[in-house]
Image 1 (tube, rainbow, N blue to C red):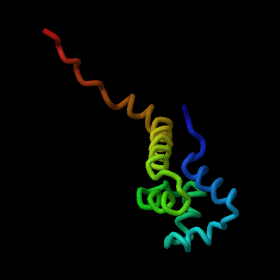
Image 2 (image 1 turned 135 degrees about the vertical axis):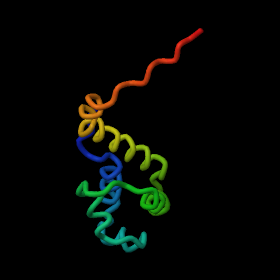
Image 3 (image 1 turned 90 degrees about the vertical axis):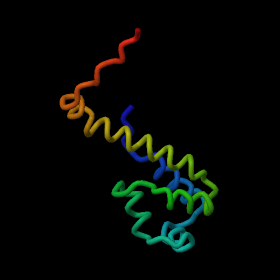
Length: 99
């Protein structure tokens, strides 16, 4: 399944919006640059482990959940962007012979 948008970023954005917390305030409260949130929301960066931990503490969104969502998105993007090239370039290793 191709994920068009980063679900971790979407979850964070929606939670901040639901609580009425501007991104600039969240960034200040979590001691991160405002540009980090902007980059995450605009798809220029993913949610790092550090950022996930900060959101876990700040909003109570599980860091593990954010990292899993980010990982699924990254894999989906790689399958779409690099999958065909890898399929062409890499031959599978021989299967293990069973005795």
